[in-house]
Length: 281
Length: 54
Image 1 (tube, rainbow over the protein chains, first blue to last red):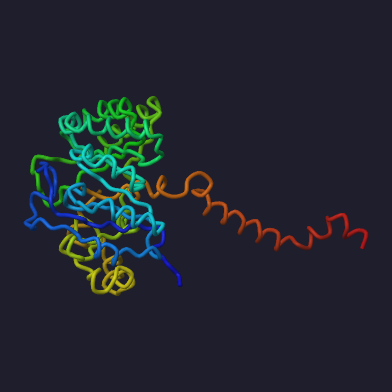
Image 2 (cartoon, chains in turn red, blue):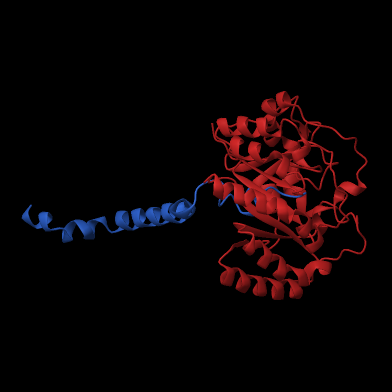
């Protein structure tokens, strides 16, 4: 059977609990109880015939989940490539599991130099352990949110990333459509162009891989490349659209939702969606 | 938290790299080449050395 989503990513929210309370994080505005996805439910929704990648994070810190690396091992055993984004504060405690599980990619979500200096020892510990054990995985990323307040810190953060022997840097735009932090402002197109020119030069000089945000279009790259399942099994188009339930992953399975009319009409009408029409992520 | 690494990188690092990333272009080029050969098959057959012997 034709599998249109075979190269896509299933993003699974393994927990809603977090040990930080970041100013720009959407989680601050959400009133959701702390929950953890069970290993059984994870196995139920993960279909290796549909997805090539699984991203194990949502609105919570994935390393708080005790069975996280059992999920990683299970996904890898099914031929699905695993990745996750963490705030980095708990990496040291789970170092052995990170290497043993076969996790492919790990990103440290960073939005300012203060947080970066807080997690630096953990990042360095991970990279040092990978070198010491001659492990090929995981590939380590910095996933940096760009906005007005940290614009001038980005070159410095890139240099620090290079010193810490980070493999690659991802820059992405701030999502602040809900106004979680009213002071946080996105860069203008001109400012963005200027910044991208500068960071490309820095990346070349430092010989570090760099991924920049793409030009925004509809359907957006998140919708084209992934689907999100919340800790309760609700399927939504992306992490920023928690209220747009397309179906239930536990009851129907993700493939059925992806083939449904509800999903199809969401894709068609995305440009008129009240949130998507204002999102430039 | 936001989109997974494989979404922001387009799956560049988790899966195939190098030549695999060029597959769409390679297939498209082969298709165009096939159409060209089919269109000019008469001319090509006449130009082949064994066609003269026949």
